[in-house]
Image 1: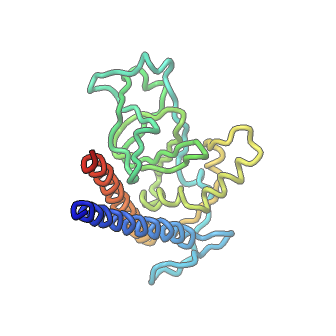
Image 2: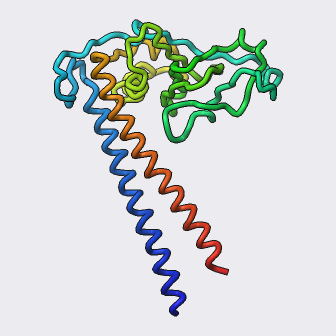
Image 3: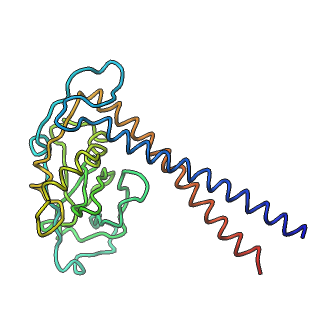
Length: 247
């Protein structure tokens, strides 16, 4: 009975920690969703619901295609002939290379031969990539040079209208996702494409305000990631201990 009590106390403490981090994670996710909704103008307004002190100017509204380059990726086929183990090959960016946590694509599991470059789309550090699947649609910032297949859209801010972190968060904000869904309504294929994303109306403030918004949303992402990792670690510990403490 004494050993049972000790084991029960141990697992109760683990469960308490798991519950604590789950609640913090859930609250942060709700907070971020609310911030994305309130920090970007909606309904044709030129002003967001909340903003930082010192910023009062109206936001500018433009079509996204007027501000950035948007291109679809491409795949050399059959792709199997172009995959290479050569370390000098080109990074081949697949959906699975996008991190579950975080915003940056920093590595790929596969590379392709340089001769495949003519049939794909090259991306560079600082470029954004967006999955063209409506069920996915999360934007990422490239931290490496590579090539993207036709499951990705390239978004390149060549004219530097945007702070890259702000742009990344904006592209995944509810106001943008709602426009994608509206434009895709009635389409036979429920996917994003260059034309659909390009005609979305975006609101942009000054670069200084963009940076402030990007910093806050990135801090929220870091906290969400922290609690998600702690949750995974605690759950793995509990699973391992359950396995080892019972015959």
